[in-house]
Each structure stands twice: as structure tokens, then as C-alpha cells.
Length: 164
Image 1 (cartoon, rainbow, N blue to C red):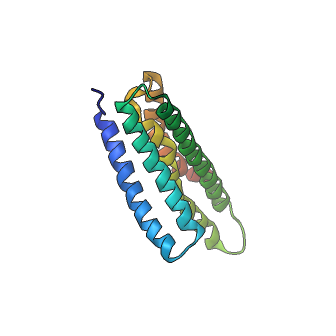
Image 2 (cartoon, rainbow, N blue to C red):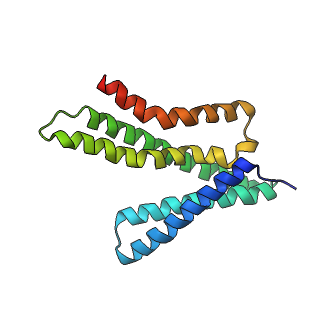
């Protein structure tokens, strides 16, 4: 019988817990105050929940080709959204750190705002790899593990490098 490793259980638990909370809270907020922000959060939380559920179901039905294709498509979509988010927030941080306009606080506010969105976007980028860690080839698993601290420290190194 297929099993999830401890890392995969941890990643699934965190992903489903955070995504479930975001889904319910953003859905209630969307019903009270229909704004695009709440719709975006609801869709992102739904994608994460669907990916996690698909990965677990596929683990217990490895021969289901439709589930495999769905998991690959959802993984690619979640990772792509995360990559776009990481690139956009890094660009926003760079523009805020190099801002030389009339308001001295505007650049700092841009950096802080970008930092607030960087780590959730980075989590979306790494999530598909964490959900299937035991099924990844050893070389890919090592690269993902090495990428985690690099991605975590990238904005700090980038901001320090710009200021020097």
C-alpha cells in the first residue's frame, strides 16, 4: 500500500490547512464584499486544494492516467503562478529599492508590500515539488532542497546588493 513520507504529510497538512482557511475566509469575504482580490484568493486556494487532493488520490491509484494528467497540469499551473508572482514581486522590490522620487517613503513602502507577497508566491512555486517529494528523482529532490534557502534569502541578498 502506498504511503506518504513525513515530509509529504507535513507539506500536505500545511497546504490543505492554509488553503482551506484562505478558501473559507475569502469565500465569506467575497460574498459580503465582491471584489477581485477575494475572488483571486478563492481561486488560488481552490487550486492548491485541488492539487493536494489529486496528489493524494493518485498516490492510492497510481494507474489512473487521467489523474496523472490532471496532477501534472495542476502542478504546472500552480508552479507557473508562483514563478510569475516571484518575478513580479522581485521586480517591484528592485523598483522600490532604487526609487529616487519626491516621496522618500514610497520606495520603502513598495519594498515592504512586495515582501508581503513574495513568500506566498515562493510557496506556490515550491508546493508541487513538496507534495511529491518521494516520487522525485534524487537529483531533482536535491536541487529543490538547495533552492529553498536560496529562494528564502534571495530578496534580502537582492536588497543588500542594491544598497551597496
